[in-house]
Image (cartoon, rainbow, N blue to C red; front, side, top):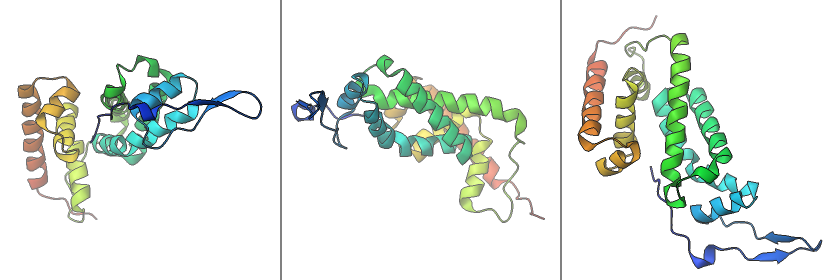
Length: 200
């Protein structure tokens, strides 16, 4: 997971130009335009520029949401809701260099909200069946881990962030985060070592 943003360089800035109808416009943003320039463009009324942010962060946060929720449909719902919120409140982003961290917070909140709403309707994950793939067994085991421990495991071992990055991203102290990681690992080891059920 890469949540940083490149610095805005002078060459990022788009010069305004007058069109054939006499109206002023700006050149389309380059695909590698900095987050700072993209945010500036959106806040200046360039709605299309927001698509750059979506493309830039979608894959990372789709993977995170899927690991957190264990369901691709729910993960897509969480992602869509987070980006809608981001667009509506972009002026409250704490800074272009923190847009990745800010978006992560929105995605996490939507995952938590969806999990709370879906929990009563979903059966508790059972042990992996004898015919389960490794990925499916891990998905089921991870779904049974408490949310905060699940988040810690995903950030550390799926997104491969350093402990320092994880602490900064989650806002908890290092000892608490490490305890969550260790708790998740213990639960996963116990879950994956449990006798498998036989599919009928």
